[in-house]
Image (cartoon, rainbow, N blue to C red; front, side):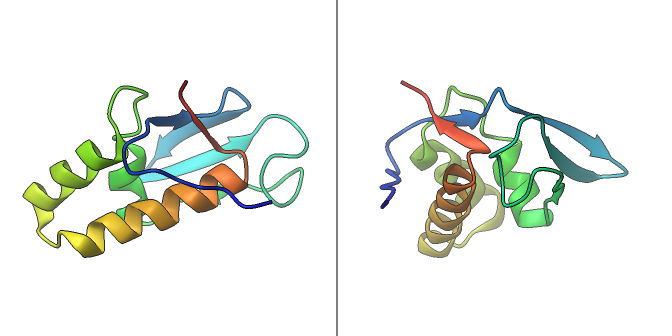
Length: 100
């Protein structure tokens, strides 16, 4: 199954996860089986993942998020590729869903 992630689409956290910020780190906890790789797996995001995750509010396209991060950190095309890779992985694991 191939997932196509579009820079012009909006993505949001799944209703099947909870996330909390603990000591500056984002922790994602699956609530149902079939989310992530294993039923009981937790996910902790690095600094880049955290910066992207905090902007996945269900309102902004990935392009808008890339523009914000590029303005804040510089990097342009690299940031866009990081966002697409990050979102693709989380959609594949059912942690993020496309907003329709």
